[in-house]
Length: 299
Image (cartoon, rainbow, N blue to C red; front, side, top):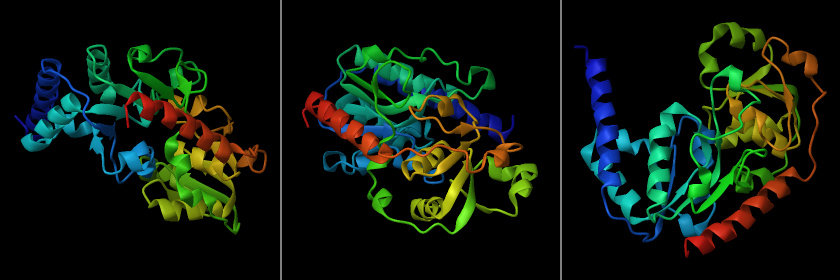
């Protein structure tokens, strides 16, 4: 049996073991924890969580993947934290995505048993192109949670766009030095036939740090990207955005960019719509939802 297969089986066992233990425990709602995907190599995943922006949540976070961590102490901490604390889940594309389904189903189950859980800025994230623009239901019943704020405008729940809009970096002013800026998703960096097509343009990716990426976005008039958060941040910064979807999540933001693909994107330069007041709109929606969430969680 190969080492990869052995490790895969161990992770699978850890997932089911942790889930089983949580389901069979008693619950309390002491303090709060913000659970999301903590991926420092994907800055959208990292900065889409409320704990970055509210003092009441400062330092109170947990990686949603800790339930399958090979370290038993990490798994046990996940179990104890989930059972003992109220939970804020999000943000990010955690719904309609296989890699998060077990966790979300678990949270749905314990929510109806008295666990206080808030969904904050989560959204659907189906990778199958046949679902693009056609998502009508989530893979969990969001009405079973105490509060549900989703970043998908046409879907159930309060409309709450990604909380990363609250980052003060968006209050900066930038000088435009490029007509076009191309930001690749980290997976696209491995596709040479795409990166070579844009080798004569200024490029970046969602693997860089936030300061460098926002500076790059700020320096361009048009942004071409297959990164959801780059699309979102560029729209907040009043850029003309051409989005290249790699998931259903690109199709349900309230304000739509131009949707294209890497072969045809350049023909849409300077044709995108900019949205005045979008940054403040998104901030207001998050502050309004925060008031509801903190009242519900007694923070």
